[in-house]
Amino acid sequence: MGINNLSHFFSSKKFTLFVSLLGLYLVSTGTSWALFSFLRGDSEEGSKTVTEGRSRIDPNLPKTEECSLNGKMFSKPEKDIWEKRRPMTAIIENHADSRPQSGLSNADVVYEAVAEGGITRFLSVFYCGASEKDVRIAPIRSVRVYFIDWAAEYSKYPVFVHSGGANNICNTCPGGVKPRGDIAPEVDAFKKLITLGWRASQGNAMDAGTNLGVPAAVRNQFRLGEKAAWEHSYEGYTDKIFDEAAKRGFSNEDSKGASWDDRFVVWTFQDGKPQDTPKADTISFEFWTNKPDYDVSWKYDKGGNRYLRTNGGKEHQDFETKKQISTKNLVIQFVKERGPVDKEGHMFYTTVGEGEILVFQNGDVIEGTWKKRTQDDRTRFFDDKGEEIRFVRGEIWIEVVPTGNKIAY
Image (cartoon, helix red, strand yellow):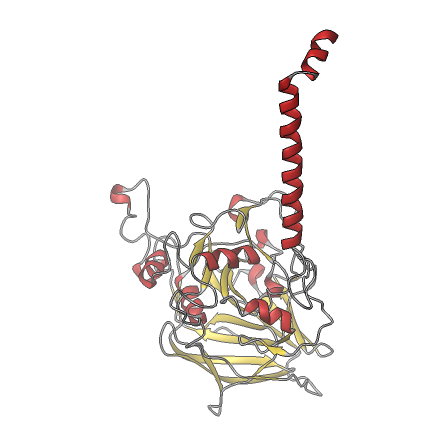
C-alpha cells in the first residue's frame, strides 16, 4: 500500500470505526479482568486470595472445628467451605506406572483394595481436607462394585468421581452386550450405579470419560513430567468438581432441603496419646503373592504419632506435596475374596456382614471386628470387648485385605 493510500486509510471512516471498536474491546476486557480479580479475592475472614493449588486459608488460624469424617481439627474458614458441600469419593489408581499419585495426602479417609490381578486401587474421600485449596487428584480410574458400597456410606448420593468401570457394554458385539461369561453380573459396576440412581448425565456419579469434562476433569499425560500411558492421564480438581456437583443439586443439601448427613453415622474420636513403648513399630503385608509392586508397609513415627507409608519397597509420596504419605489410623480389614469371577478377571470382595480387623494407632494395636449390615450402612469397628473403637483425630487408612493373609508387626 502506498503513502497516499495509507494517509487516505487513516483519515477514513473505516479507520475511525476500527479504533473505536478496538478501544471498546480493551475497555471491556479490562473491566472483565478487574471483575474476575475481585471475585477471586478475599471473600471471608481468614481467607487469602485463591490461587489454584495453593492455600487460601491462613495456616496459623486456631483449629477449633472437628471434621465429622475423621475427627481432625480445622479452622473456622475451612469449615465454612466444607459445610456447603457433601463428601467427594474418588477412585484413584495405584498401578506402579501411575505413581506418585496427586492429592492422596488431602483425603480424610482412604480405602485400598485389589482391582484385579493383584493391582490395588484407592477410594479416597475428600471433604474437610480439601477445603484449604483446590486439590489436584490423579490419576482417576475405573470403579469396582465394592468401592461403590463404601462410597454409599457417605450419603445416599455422594459426589462419586471415576473414569469408566466394570460393565457389559460392547460396541462391536451383537446387541451391544458382551458374551455371557465375559463379566459376572455381581461385578457389573455400571449396572449397580444405574440401580442406585447415580449414573446419569447429571447424576452424582461423575465419569471423567462421559459426563465430567473440562475444567473439572482433564487429560494430562505429562502430570509427572514424562509422557504417561493414556489410561493413567485423567486428573481432576476438587473445587471445580464440587462446583459441578452443586450445579447438579448435590451440595450440602438436595433440592428438597435435606442435608446429606441426615442419616450419616459419625465414628467416635479421641486425641492422640503415643505409647511409651510402641507395640507395633512396622506393619507390613501383601495383598497377593508374587505382586511385590503392591506390597505395603507402614512405619510408626512416634514423634509425629503417625504411620508413614511404603509401597512396593519405596517411600510412597504425594506428587503435589513431595512428602511421604502418612496416617494417624491404620485399619486392616479382612474380607472374603472370591474370583476371578469372569473372563475379564474381576474379583469380588465382601463388604456387607462382618469380619476381623487390626487397628493400629498411637503405636498400639487393637484386635476386633468390623460390621456392616447393608450396602448403604456405615461400617463400624469394634474391639474384642464389643466396644466401638475410637479413632485418633486425623487421617484414616483402611487396607482391605483378603481373609487369611498374614500381617507382620
